[in-house]
Image 1 (cartoon, rainbow, N blue to C red):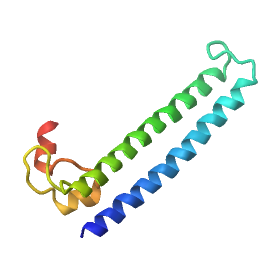
Image 2: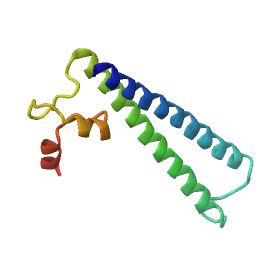
Image 3: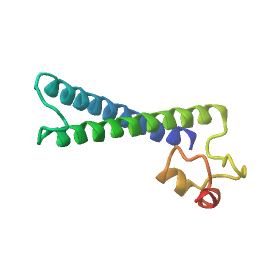
Image 4: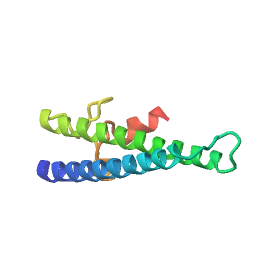
Length: 115
């Protein structure tokens, strides 16, 4: 079972790394395409759209980095034997929850208490 979990985490990490690389290229392309133009975000009709796109991609990059950190932390927990155990109550995290959220650190019961 540990190998299946490691494989799932590694695959998720790889997909997240690829997504982060693509988003970074997209962000760099946006910056590059606007760096040569004499645009003023405030007064140019396209400026607000370009600024929105830049911020949107930046937010997605931030989310991808967070997910990557979650995957790395989950892999570390797998190595130290704490993966699959709730950090709040110490009970096992259900297989269904781990299948849906491989980096989960809490069981469903404890996660629902936080809301």
